[in-house]
Image (cartoon, rainbow, N blue to C red; front, side, top):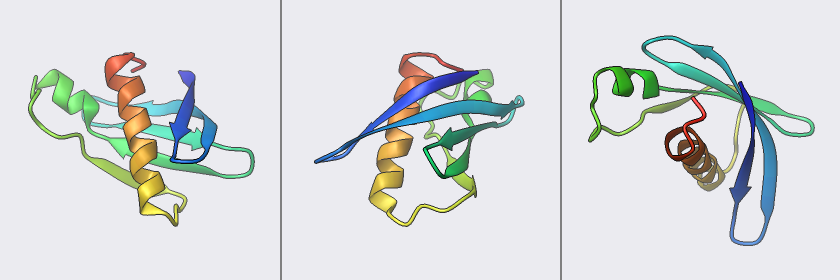
Length: 90
């Protein structure tokens, strides 16, 4: 499944293409692609949904690629959580 991902910073807006590449009962991997680079992030949302652990925090791991700015990574994860949880893309 593929969907657009909008990431907003204080002075700029970015548009990425997010694709759920792998999903099991334990984890989900998402490839985020820009014009020239891509990264793969993994989360534990399927585990939290199957065990109905609504109060638990989502764990994210950078599996492939690099991001030099940790604040941008936090904004990217925030946008992903909004799409995956609120808009139910997964």
